[in-house]
Length: 184
Figure: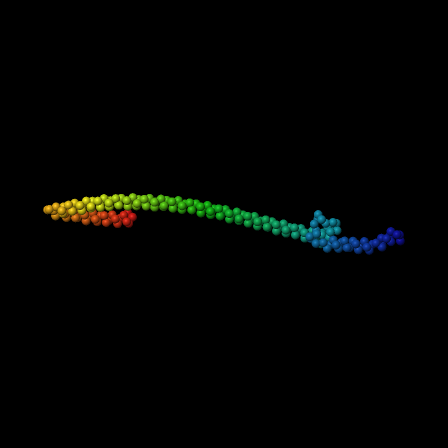
């Protein structure tokens, strides 16, 4: 045998053993190592033979689907938040409009009450003025009665008429006082 052949036969088991180990190492790679941009020839062969590329493709597709689902959920949450904000703004505007309307109604009611209070105050003032005028008339009638009664021959009919006048004035003054005290 020639020397080359002898060297080949001597090294052949080592070459077969190294090739087998390389193939086994290539076959033992998992899908996480089956990135085509990072594999060498032997790991690429291993990824192809044990389905690592297909597993990696499924894993990447699953990640993609999960990311898309998360993006859709995030979009839905953003839309819901936008709707909630819009509803809150609409509720605020409705409440503001209602409040302004109620304030307007209260102002109108307050103005009406003020006008009524002013009217009652004027009415009370008028009643008190009328009462004072009646009291002045009653005082004049009492003086006239005293004068007639002080005469030597008083006229009885005139005395009765003045007494009735005083009584009527007294009743009118009492009515005016009650009206003024009751608010008009």
